[in-house]
Length: 548
Image (cartoon, rainbow, N blue to C red; front, side):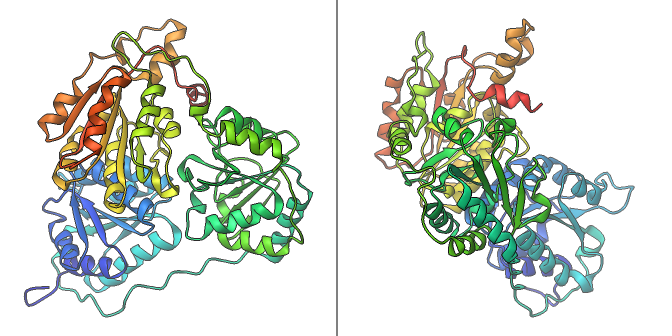
């Protein structure tokens, strides 16, 4: 650092980067100016957003898609409160994230809020640099906690401490805490359940997205004849396997739902088996054995009753169990099941009556056409709303790092920022943001960020001129819907004003400009303003509202 001394803010910034953070997202104000510059000077990439809420979700998505720890930098008080929805999503998703926030400790300050309490209230871990001599230790500890415990850490930097002199010290990043090995008796119990099963199904979740997990799970599934499914956040994990059922739960295809509900053993691997993934338990047969494997003992049985749990790393448990099984078994992998999956694996294999016409395009036909047009090496981010099932299930992805699903908090408006963070993490893939009209307008400020960063992104707005989920939930009951319906918005004009190329789509035939854009040079991002049909609720909607 330049100058005769290193301050607390500079020390914290340097140590965060030295401890493994390579990217920081944020909005810089007076309180976080010095620490952000220190992170940049130490080698981190800084990505400026237009709103702290967007920055938080970008950092969340970056961490999910990069596999590392990301940082969010915000101003004291209002900077932190602006970011809280994104921080809550990340906390509920157990994303390893360090939120670096200035803090006004004087209650007379207009910026004062109880930031420690705010962090705890949304499920994050509050930490604070109380004195200069502990700055380096606390900063390193924040990264280690985020990484090893997969938690969001809110690191408070009081304004009256930041300018004090402090030494960054010499230690490098703390070594990662080794995963606890599963008990041999637990491994044998799982192996015995697999031996007895005739129709086993594996459901892999967020905890199965680590390196080597797919190979370990497929190896074990081959031994016991298990079919392979995922939760929504792990979509794509088993892409290419002939036994891949894709997503379990509300998004499941009719065939996947039928096969999962027919299982006599369901094993959740790093998966909560919650109401979304198991359709409020409807996908679990009354006599099915249910096992949950998770590195977090507190997660086992937290969402539903299980027959038994195994505490341990997904990859390690799968490998250990495979070595215990004596011989291969056919299990659920019959010729009939294989043929059914070959014919009906995807939602696009299910017949439907195209409801397009009169200037509106059927979202199924639209998304199937986009799936055919867009390159296979893509990374898809989806916002929340009535439309979300279409891009989630009709757009294929190459693997589990091709789908970024920030839906643990079920907030509308995170989709565009999610796509930006994912795109920064994976510049080798075409980023695709799928938004509803409500979410697109909530996050519209970040359209400028897409242009400024030069991201070759495709933004698809499914515009039904409403909060469609509420329309289809309350409309059948005869309720007035004026509060959730809006005039049609010209998203193409908005996007062009910010530097996008744009096309308005009212029929599949209107997609030819997308083909032309994909042919190159892609010098500006593309927004597809799709005016979609408005009389059809998504198939997953009924399940979604059962959870309210």
